[in-house]
Length: 254
Image 1 (cartoon, rainbow, N blue to C red):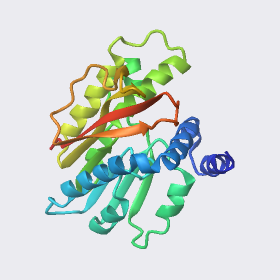
Image 2 (image 1 turned 45 degrees about the vertical axis):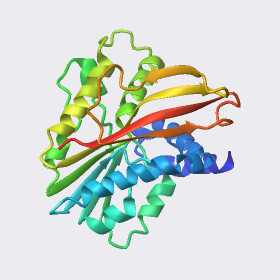
Image 3 (image 1 turned 90 degrees about the vertical axis):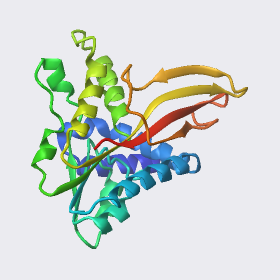
């Protein structure tokens, strides 16, 4: 708890005010990632290897953008820094410990940006939502990675609806946000990679399926080039009686 409090305080000092409400979630995720490092290792390695596999296909490696860069655990940060002229990391929050690590980069070619990538406010207001339109203004863009972000857009939107007690949201808000992200990625004039969890299972000690949840809100994801399981919460993390396993897919959209 002390380390989490320190991480929160340090991150708050380096995070723009409008993004500070998201710090607690990032700190909690960081703490869980540390507790479950062994269980998460294969998922994180699979994510990193898929990104590297895509990056190695490129003839030019000028600028790479990672959407949902977060803790950098599932992103091959060091390899991207070495391969590309510029690496841009975008998320709601980057923890102070992550930013400190990035400052050690000898090439000084990493840029960090705080940004809401969901399009929530525009959809809610009935405006055309283009949350990834800024990517078209990034010069020499050769690679965009959506790193375990898509499901979080939906989860974050659902939590916001509940927290802010928004009663007049469109019925199709959550699936619309899914479609917006997927279509924006597929329309980019560069290589775009999608890595996302699509659903999760709650499994009891006896192996019985206790709950199944669709994280993409009815939106069918593209056919995966790779797929694997992510044991998000092993036995004992949330309960001694069940574990939670997320199902992850990866593919290139362009």
